[in-house]
Image (tube, rainbow, N blue to C red; front, side, top):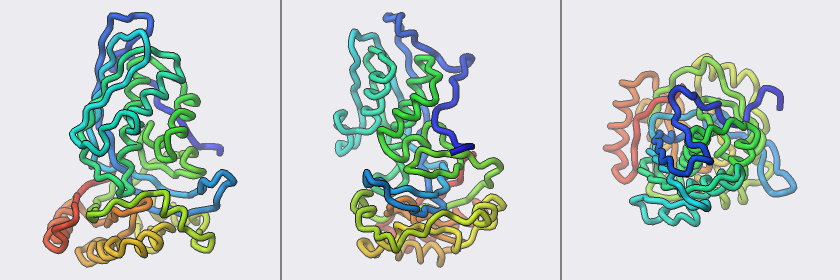
Length: 311
């Protein structure tokens, strides 16, 4: 789509250390934050013949994030290893970050041993994009280390890993369409003060989409809704998530958290992604901090985060 983007920003040679694949004695490392995201709205447009749903959404990165560190050592063949304190995601055969490293090296014909260290803070199975963000961070850092400037190929690698990964190649507030590969940054996006509430359940994405009926698709967002969001006029009617009724039917606590956020001072609240995290938009950082304390006292079993949007 004209005006969209899918790729990675060119590495800055002044700040990004690089490894030349022809220099096998070099060892380099980088570390970056991998931010979570919320979907301000998530509207389903249709379903493709291959089963993937096309959407219209605004993705917003937030100040909650994982920490990802990679170290590349000489090796005659590609190899990837992973260290993570969470045993449930520490299997390098299935972790999305390790899959991203393998896909990158295969795409660009690079040999080396990539060691990935993950310090997880983003709750899993919550619709916050934690695994996809980790994968995007790995791709960004490998591109910087190896001096790769190939947005089209990077975008193809990213979308092969998952619908949210292309956004995390360069996370900034964006209108996201297609299956996640059509990305248009939103200039002048306002700073949002948010409280994110995560119930003690993981919500797998696949079953939620599978249960969604065509009658529940709301179609593309009206352009006046997008203009209102860019102007900071965020109200409950704008925060449409077509997946929320399905997720709430299966996990009523998601709906309860949304109501509690509104009772705790949120101007508007909604679910992000396929759930189960919900978020509330507050008028200031102070209001968000106060709202987060109220939420912690009301629902001690939920994980509560006071955050802000990233530019």
